[in-house]
Image (cartoon, rainbow, N blue to C red; front, top):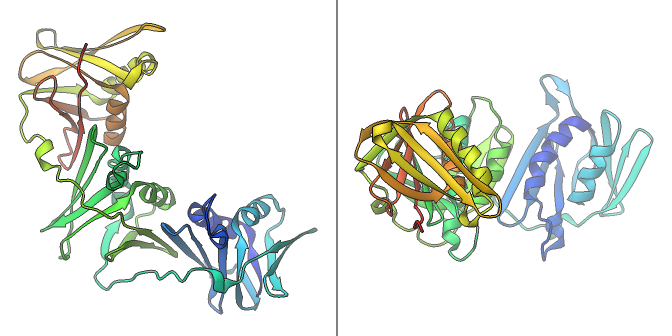
Length: 380
């Protein structure tokens, strides 16, 4: 194998691949990047067994030649060292060649490196699934789904299935749910094309990595499903993730369909008040703030008290849509995460309650497809 390739374009491909390279693994070959050079261009693959990312760099980009191939071939090059080397080299073009089996030589300007590679036959045979009935979805919609749900996944492995987001298709809707048992995020989007029903759980970590790779173009993503994997295909990038095993818990009974108390508040005022209150709340257990809804004053008081730091009281203007006064306690960070998911400074937020110990919901008044649910904590 011997090629010359544009350094900046190669670095952009490596930035994607690096997300699939493990720091620690019992299989040393997985710390490497698989290079395959064909007459069409350069294929790069990285995998940690859970996620696999494959990119393709063609010979020409926008009618400009970016790869010159002298000899086709393949090799596994240690990923960590290779990426750091390419970052630090000066020059527009890099030469990569193999010799004596599994050695790779990298040249750029006056710099020359030799890395010990792996035999490409040692790399696991990873099949990227492709289906004729792939789901088509806009990139921005997929990024929104991830942003509005993935933060509610569980961090611990006590219940592994809760570390992922449940994607369930029924009739003409895609329902996406994440919960760690203390909060829940739900997003519903229509599916224009007829698809077979499915119910699967995608690891939260995979979705976070995928979101970081998706750019802001208006292109579509093809979503290919199998019994064990999901593949997201966009442009020259293939991102495949294993699915989590187990049955995702039924959560519909926890999301209230009606509320006894409902208030409306300006998004920005609400966010800023909780953001300031969290400065004190974060120095106490569970980041607890207390909410005191006062209909007669058209206010909601947000208070936090930390014996070691001090206390805070924030007053937020509210419209009382229904119900009476209420006092309730909850995590300030959970509220902030929910508001970040809503992320609409020009709108107003609806908050619905059914008592001081029942889960309450937040949503954008202009978006009925997204619900953020939070479980309160018991007040002293």
